[in-house]
Image (tube, rainbow, N blue to C red; front, side):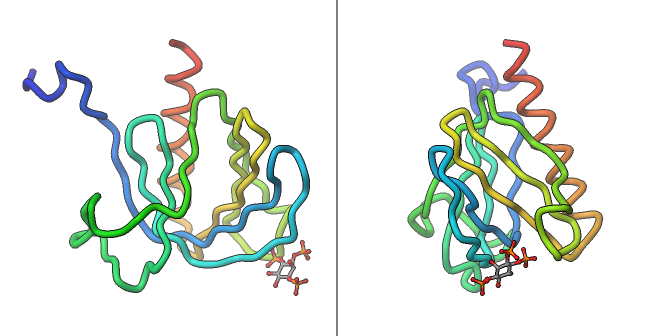
Length: 128
Ligand code: I3S
């Protein structure tokens, strides 16, 4: 194995553009406000960036822009949640701290890839 993997560089990484709205903060319901977000999976964290227009998957680098917020996936729950929106392809991510996000893509394959990837990370953390 490479030296990087021995010092714990995250194995699973993914980045892309999804529609996002936060629907709860610390268990308190929030009003929906959908907007496009550049979403990056780094290790155990899901990091959200604003200004997705200036980003593309190939050009994005960690130092390019300041994260809007970050979610710790340890202990998080992930569920398809099409009943929570009129949009298609919606899932809900709930953190241990009671923050809830809906994430959505018009593209069936993209949203499935995100769901499966996040599920894998969360399940792996559950087994640690
Ligand atoms: O679940 P809701 O309340 O019907 O969500 C819709 C509203 O938040 C709406 O905003 P205002 O009611 O503040 O104008 C949004 O524009 C919609 O996008 C929300 O519904 P969807 O079905 O798109 O998640």
